[in-house]
Image 1 (cartoon, one colour):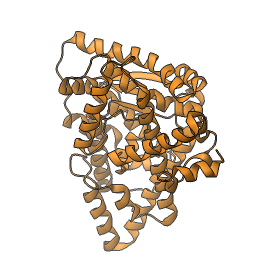
Image 2 (spheres, one colour):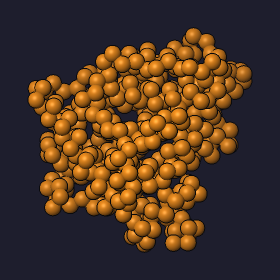
Image 3 (tube, helix red, strand yellow):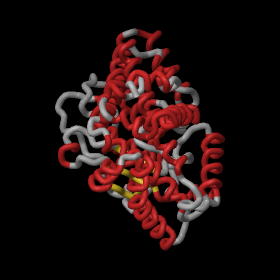
Image 4 (cartoon, helix red, strand yellow):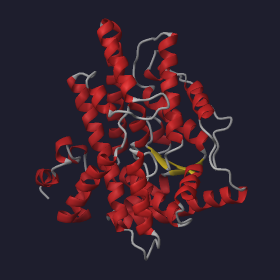
Length: 383
């Protein structure tokens, strides 16, 4: 298991200020670690067995997801190129912070004062800590230059959280890792089936971050009224421990310009599709392959619904989870339901082969309004 101990977030090499410079990343990780327990206390043998099970499960899950989706070639590519790490909570924090820093390092930003940087650092630390106790898995697409040297995505499987949820909900020791890794393998396959998807997703996320930076710049130059609006949005979006309190995508939308709001809507639609697709893939699981699947599905769905967000206790949390948490676009139960309903409706009409047209090009992605009207998407693509 990869630990976050003694690992630091590499410093930025950019000379001009960037959005990454708005946060003291090492301090954010330290704050998160101070606020979060290491995980359940279990014998060393149990920890090692959990790590081994997760590694073994992802090996079987990737071709399985390829068969369900009708994307066996993409599954083989994902298996050959993805980097799979089983991590502890500090390891998840460190890897997530490094990925975010890489995303934000290409976005120009103004110099900020010490107080603003401290607030941003505290916010990021709170979110990293909250996220690290809830995610079971996380897929991080390759960023920029790293895509040339490591073309595959990075999959993080969070062993302490898998142990914790298995103990708390009394879930099957073999079936739970298989369930989690099948969900995450679907995200890896999505990125392999659409070679443009990682760059497109990162570009859309970057546009949202750039919009938030520009909104803060406008706020700084817009006087007390704009500052008050931003403060109210931040306070309403998150409580002190990083937990969401209101749908921040709606709150932040009020601070963004029309083009920036459109970018936010595209990000929400894309993440909804990706999460819904991964959830719908789990529909194909039956007791012949996973004996406790009916109980597993019911217990995890109820837990996710009762918890109020999908943070790692549902079918799994994929590539959208980190950014969901960072800017407040939590994958609510409704978001999983909307995405899964879209995928199920399309598959019912045109099969997985028809659905897979979505991976052909960016303009094949469902538009925000089409998620609730899959027939419109099918008609637009001529399926």
